[in-house]
Length: 452
Image (cartoon, rainbow, N blue to C red; front, side):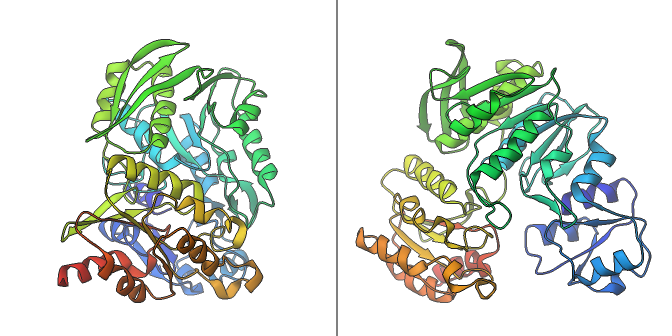
């Protein structure tokens, strides 16, 4: 929402907004854009009678500003509705969806297009380093959107991506997530099927062939379908994947004919998959293999995607957004492949609506397989959950220690740091995994390491 607010301000609108506990990088971004962000919600924030109130999907009935909006009959929209009517309708909508890889894929595709002077629009659920902002309205036709399956607003429980008028869609993968709104993976599949049903017959669906759910749902598409994966049965096949000092190198075959060799300054085989989904769309839009590679080679990733926070005493500290067990596993596998022989310490905050519950209780210990040691922080808003619903951190730690891994959990980041620092040695990698601020553990850890 902050990215859209910045673009609307650039268009000449007067913008203000409210949130609780904003933290960098978004809080810093709003300040640099000159947007007034109120800390907390009060009816008085709407006393200037705004022409439009945009209500985010985390806001519910009982919020003072929601109640004031309804009582005063102010005009309001959800964020996806605003995007559709203000920005998307007259563009070529390219929606990137899936449980994992959306943000990286949208950022990469946007940069590949920008690199050949296609002035595309984009909406990215993070801050891509190449652009320094997550939303841009360009003069060209392509509009690349991160398609979130989470619900739209308290008054519209449909997934956000159903508002985005897709002409082209990439579906990277489909897994269970968002257990606060979906009962099972079948409900999530239904949402993706509805997205596929919205693509016009002259559109394009790009799917991960290696994902059985993607493969199944794509069979019902009314448009052209191109598949990608490591499987020889995929239309676009990844072959000869290698880790390099710079990142990844791989070959792409199209219908068993070699298209070319590509290099990407990211790590992890999952990012090769993200890249090939992007490649297919770029190729469909008329770009050559050389043009696509030029974009790949200059891509700088997205903030909080294995972003290096600092290096102290030969110990490298990474910030990463991984919180789903699959994302944790992929991130750790990518690190250990890129940094062979280094010990990896994973610090995890159970913060999302799914990971703070015990839905993935038995999946976390296996997800940390490639970590040398693991610490788990405070369960976010644990008091709102019944004890039987909560993630059992002790069970995970017990399982990890039984495997011979140093493991620890605590509600205090200071206690985690005190446990971790004496065990660290030169060459170790510490990856902090959270979709939030993790109580500032990044800067606290680096400060402690600096003290020596």
